[in-house]
Length: 304
Image 1 (cartoon, helix red, strand yellow):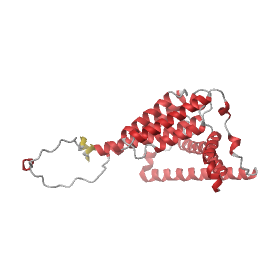
Image 2: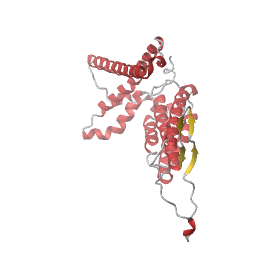
Image 3: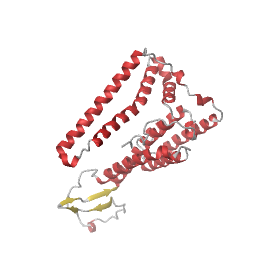
Image 4: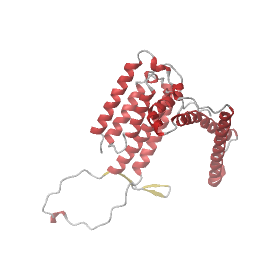
């Protein structure tokens, strides 16, 4: 029942192994933004290449395999499910039924084009129900590939950054990036502190969900015996209880913050000490150069 605690999604795991932990948090944030933004309006070749690059970074990061393999397997399963659904579901209107004229009436030779349909299954009959035909064409295959690669790239890149970067380092990196906007009156310290609270709040949400699932398991709830209507009502009740517990935790955290004075700490207070360590500067320079190269390749080879 403690399987949620074994999947550290969005939580920092303290350790000393891996060069990815010593990387500048500003550079990590830049790489994550690259993984989030460059797939937009990009072709399948760039999306697949970006996913392979992310997996290469994961395998060569020097992190312990037990830290990231469960979360990667879960996200991969979710991405494959979304990709299969996007591939099999219809992506457009049915073709109009128009009368065809014989090809001999045309004097010109038509160029040969690749087939629009890639795979056709069915119709399939299961226990009296007819399913299909399931048609996979080029458009649906591209949509499924884009959906699967986008989910896996976005979720795993953010999770990899959160696994290797403390919340305080991310707050300092965000404050450093938004510091030019402070001259325009933007409350940078307040926004950074809200980010810190949000990152610290993720384990609390996971803990509340774990407690609710443990309560259902201890009561031996059988959804098959309850029926569809009662099962749906139970799911709604659990969701309502989860939301109420999360809001209660948020209120308790706000009261504790007010009771302690509610003082905003400056962003320089969270400056990571690893920036002054020896041997980190060449690593940061190499990461920055590779980031510029990848962005340049996106402009040349990543278009549709």
